[in-house]
Length: 292
Length: 298
Image 1 (cartoon, rainbow over the protein chains, first blue to last red):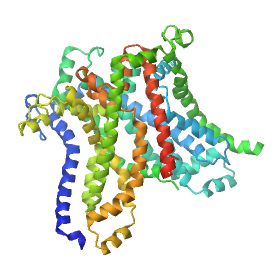
Image 2 (cartoon, rainbow over the protein chains, first blue to last red):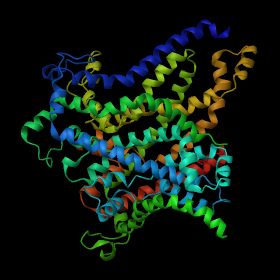
Image 3 (cartoon, rainbow over the protein chains, first blue to last red):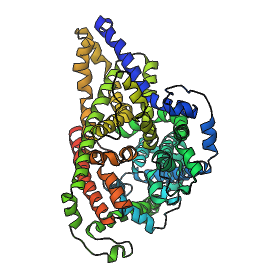
Image 4 (cartoon, rainbow over the protein chains, first blue to last red):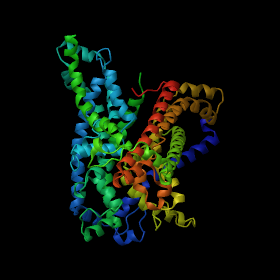
């Protein structure tokens, strides 16, 4: 009955209104960019576009898609995302399985765990890491984008906590049937861990799709850039110097509608997986924070 | 013994690939930090470059530009820390008052989205809408007679803009942990309070807030570990030479002067200074969180 007091009803009203406004504020910038990308050049450069296209046209997208270097960068991004995620998930699952065992059953487990966790706490920093990647001969290869961050210790901890939540009898009965750890992991643990693996893969995919700095540091040729680096360097910061693009291409890229179209295409994959992300990540966080 | 080894060797094998990658890409770079005490020349390598002692660190603490960079880092990181605690906390409390589940879900769906966008995308969007020449935000402000503001190009406006846009990106996501704690409060507490005649405000003050204070303290303590991280991705995608005086942070400085400028040793020294302070803060923060709230990562 106290819920229906007049003061609380007034508060509820304002609360709903405020929260709605706040939520809309999170979307409007993206809506604006989308509207600009679908507007005519003239309307966009005269600042006439707010949240609805003015002089509706697909020109910016046609133009963007006919730019071979943009197209190529999408292909690079897809490659690094697919292979990078696969490598990363293999490593995550294998090391999480081993580290989920108790010290009593697996001597050295605590030492290994610290070996992994220490890398979260302290690292060599940008320049020594760059020098190592360079000395390893990975510069200008796709490996430079996939190997240095292949072991994601945070994801591994989430996976480890999941493995620990599984009943111990699974492993025991498998061993009684003569299985070893490889068989137990790949034939018994993996199939029942698919939801968790899917969640973490989604995280890894978003990480790879969004990564841009490594491309900027480790790749010398703009033609090798993944999409995120291409957008960062060429679309947003407008560094045309080393790209080998001709005047027409440059004029095209810096057009506001085309810029917006490219940014929107960069955001599109994230928007597409977002419903799945949202469904799983809350679980992921709770999975990571609640321990018995 | 033989039986034990036979049983556990696959576990070592499963860890081997990860261990090798961590040695190459994490531990060897840590050894590479020695170049902070050298005058590293790429053609001489680590083994033959001349030693420089503490020279680069002396330089770091006497050169006004690098002192400014440290100040900028601390100021931006500190204000981000505070706002990224308070805004999500208040937001979670307000969202908790919403009874209509569909509305709650709608709000959550919308506010979590920016978290998953990279700063490259958001930087591109923000540069467009914050533009001084008829950007969306300035168009809106002009309705109230405000003169165009150069958000990303004026030293007065750059830091507030960085802090506000960071909160805009992250507040929803940061609120998740508080929302989880709120949903865990025992409903019988509220029922009892209601019987005692406490109104909703009193309930919030005496039940809700105390119930989630422990998790708030954990989050606040852990955020201390971020004191040296002012947000490289964000700053790098938003700043420009006009605002280096207020917006250049340690990470962007290391990238520009150390990596692009080729001052490998000096850049490494600056980076080492940052990681050392960061390391101390993280360790202290985790120990404190463990001691006061029994928090541990695994």
